[in-house]
Structures are given as structure tokens and as C-alpha cells.
Amino acid sequence: MPTSKQIERIAELTAMIAELPKGYISEKNINGKVYFYHQWSEQGQKMSKYLRDGEVEPLTKKIEQRKLLQAELRQLKQGSSTGKGRGDLQMRCTLMHKRIPVVQMELDQASGFIQKVGDVYAPDHLPLGVMMRQGRIDRKSLNDWWTDRSIPASRSGIREALEALEISNTRMLLIRCLGLSLSDQYWILPEGADLSWERINFFANPFSDDIGDVLFGASKRTDALDLSSPDNTSDGNLKKRWKIIEGKRFLVKGGSNPFRQQPFNEVIADGIMQRLGIPHVHYKVVWDKGAPYSLCEDFISDETELIPAWRIVQTRKKRSSVSMYRHFVDCADDLGIPEVIPFLDRMIVLDYIIANEDRHLNNFGAVRDAETLEWIGMAPIYDSGSSLGYDKVASEIRSSKDIICKPFKSRHEDQLKLVTDFSWFDPSLLSDVRDLITETLSTDGAKEYMDDARIKAIADSVEQRILRVKELSDAKDPIKKDLVEDDVKRNVAEDYKADKM
Image (cartoon, rainbow, N blue to C red):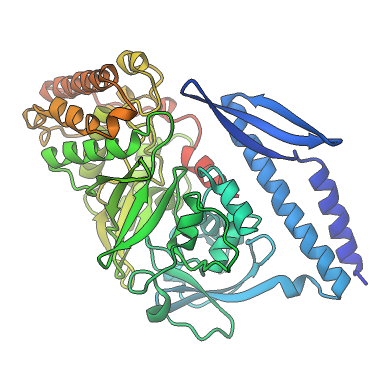
């Protein structure tokens, strides 16, 4: 028999589910432009509604929330019918940092959320930005960090992958792989499990390709899948997976329709940074089934870890009178991260030159020693593919209109005014940038996705922006301005995090 508390929770969940939208979001490619539709069934009839750009993300969150509540309701009803309570759905575990026990906690196996936080063993090793109040961990901030490890619900193909895996949400994949990642050294140790870091970490041990295969559209298998994979903790919206090649860990990442341009953009950004002497991750283009993918080696080892900028800005409260740029710099200074401003100068100039539209706060960060917690410095620049008008037609690229800017200012021109020193910038090193762009985008496979007019528009726009940077660097007193009102209007990194439902 269900308890009174179970009956109350069932009624509460049923009411909450009734208020949330049914169905799913589909996308259609019409003449090279992607359109989104809300699809659902009503009284046996299939319904469809076109979604404007601003409607897609909020609706996605509500649909995913409905699925989570439905999963909890199913588990609760099953538990009440078999005499089991909510306690049977909890996983007791310890959050580990390599070999160091950090904190006791309980995970709800129906929703994937952290339900309880227990004793703290090593507060210094808590994930950066997780708050403690009066000696106790703030469970919400720990859940935010945990959720941020999961695949975002907006990832290309994730809805189909979850259906194939028969899993309700991406946090369940986190539990199945013990939260292990190739970006840091955190993991969960279930109570009573005979496991050690040496035996299970993905830096030194092989991992399954099954999740990567599903994320890349492999057909559903009849046999059991091995879910032990770092693909369960990869972020971002584009199709991606990890592969072991000659003993090294590489990230394989796709591009979006209709131009599939992001993998080629990574190579172009790589070439620009190499010429300017900017520390960066090396990329190359590989092909699979006629589609281009970027390939880069993991720059994190079993001794280091990447801390995204989003975690860094959580270490202190931001005042409304302080810009996001100044807030990030202040947080990094408090932590003792070296050479932050020279890094930002170079990143901002690069992003201006390539018109990067996706440098959110989870797309750059710092590296520290995972055991001593000593800061090594800012991470080499990575993930620059959503740039160079990757989703725009040639006329839009030439006009330079509607270019999104992140992470500090809403316009690249305003963000460029944050640069404190241009003395390192030598435009003569980019004299062959047109050749770099043309050669990269004119390979046999690339020509299938873009024509000469598009390539010329990209090269022209890059050369124009290099000249603008040169003008600023030549000025005796370059304009430096950091106004709060010029900041990005909504917290793009927070929205990105919230996608992980």
C-alpha cells in the first residue's frame, strides 16, 4: 500500500505534469534553413506548430521537465505497488577527486539529481564554485555543477539517442558512467563498491564506443550496451564523441547544416593562432561517411583538470555595478590564476578576427593540478568553430550584421575595447590569411558544402577585421572602455547549463 506521503507526491506530480507541454521538438531543413516545430498528439490526432527562434529553448526545457516528472511518477507508482519507498531509489555514494574522498551524497536514480548531501571530508577539493553556508554544502550549487557535467538536451540527435537507450534524461547517463570525464578527475564511488581511480579512469583505461555510436546515429542494438564512456560527460550542442587513437584520447566533433563549416573553421582558427603565437589546441579535419569532423587531442592529462570560466565566476557574487569582464578578472585574481589579462587580450582579438559567435563561459577556462590544486594557467584556446559566418549566407557574411558576441559584450566592437595591450599583435604574420582560408575551404570534400562566392566573402571579411585590429594597435591611445550596459544581455553560459535537463 502506498503511504500518505507517496499519495501526496503522486498527486503533486500528476498536477505538475498536466501543466507542462507534451510531445517533442523536430527540425526541418528547407532550402538550407532550419525550422523548428512542436509536435504532439491530441485525442489521437497529430498536431504541429511552427516555433520562432525565441520559443525553441524555453519549450525544450518544459518538455524535458515533463519527462523527468513522468519518470519520477513511474518510479513512485512502481515502488508503491511493490511495497518499495523512495529510499529504494536512492544511491548512496561518495564524490571523489581522483583518490580523495570529498563529500557523501545521495543520488535519486529516477531523476539523476543529488537529493542529500552528507559529511564533507575535503572541502578544498569540492568542485570550484560549490558554495558552503555555515559549514554545510549548498545542495543547489552542487546540483548545478553535477547537471553541468551532463550532455545538454539541445545536443544534436540526443532525443533519438535517449529513446534508443530507453533512458529518460542525460543525468542518468552520468550515473551509469560514475560521472567520469576526460576534462577533470571527479567521479562517484557507490557505497560498497570495490572500485579505485586507477582501475576506472578514462585517461589510463579503455572505454566503450557504444554511447558514441548511438550519439552518431547508429541503429538500435539488441544486445546490452556498455555505458562506461566519457561521451556521457561531453558538453556542447554539436554531435561529438571521444576516440582512442594510438593510445591517445581525441575528440571528434561535427558541424551543423547546411554548410557543415565548423570543422574547417577550427583549422582556420588553428592557423591564425599558430601565426600569432597564441597557445591553442591543434585541429585537423577528418571524414566519416562523407561528412567532415574536427579532430583534436585531449589537452588534459590524468594529473590536470580544466576549470571552465563559468565555474570561476561562481566563486564570488557579482555586483550589478561590475561588468562581467571585470568580475571574471577579479575572480581569477583572487584564485591566483596567472597571466589572465594577456590571455584575454589574445582571445578577444582572435574572436574578433574570426567573428566567433559562441565563446560562452564554458568555452574557455583555466588548468590546475588535480592533486595540489595549484593553478597552471589559462587553458590553450579551443572550440572556435562557430565562427566565420558558419550558419550565414554569403551576403550576410559580407554585411557583417547580426554577429553574436560572447562572453563579455554583446558586440564584438565593444568587446575589442577591453584589450589592454596590442604590442604582441603583428598583422604581417597574417599576410597569407586569404590563402589559409581558401585552401582550407576548397578541399574536395569542403566544396560540396560551399561555393567560391562564400569562400571569398569569408576571406574578405577576415581581412577587413584584421585591418580594424591593426588600426587599434597603431593608435597612440587605443580606446579602452568597459561599460556594464554593453555586457551580454542574458547569461549565455547559464542558459547553456540549463539546457542540460
